[in-house]
Image (cartoon, rainbow, N blue to C red; front, side):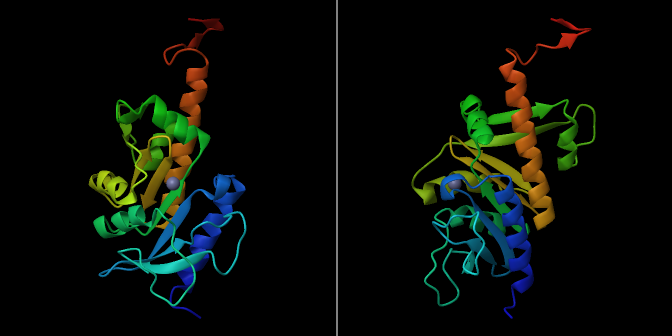
Length: 215
Ligand SMILES: [Zn+2]
């Protein structure tokens, strides 16, 4: 039994749940779970696999530079560097990255602004925002095929042990103190994005049906 068995099983369970939501289209997406601190080590999904399949080769242990820490043929996900920034820049325990149509469309619609702000929505409570006038702001960074450049743009947004960053026309990375928290925040983001897109599809963000009459 490996010393990271517990983290492996937790990450495998999260992977199963996200696969059930069909959030790994075309082998996209990658997941990571912290194993060690000082120095940071973590389990990360192996590159190029169909993440709807569940095997003993789904994850490998890497160090903060994204290098395998065991003798293995597996290669870590190409975007492992983003998870490294999460684990070295915060005390987060889990970091999740998925590509969905909703997060891609939102990232394009608000890409020039560099941020999407959500308010007057119950589910921002997932982020511990309980006040009536609270708002949730999710930064949007530009996509770069060169992962170190993408990492440089991503890194300054890792300020707390939980957070989310949209990558324009690419996907979202969400992290939390635990696997449970990271998954909760990711689900909340996707709910809020779908809500926003549905609202926009009715023609206007401001359009509200009052008393059965469209204003
Ligand atoms: Zn990606």
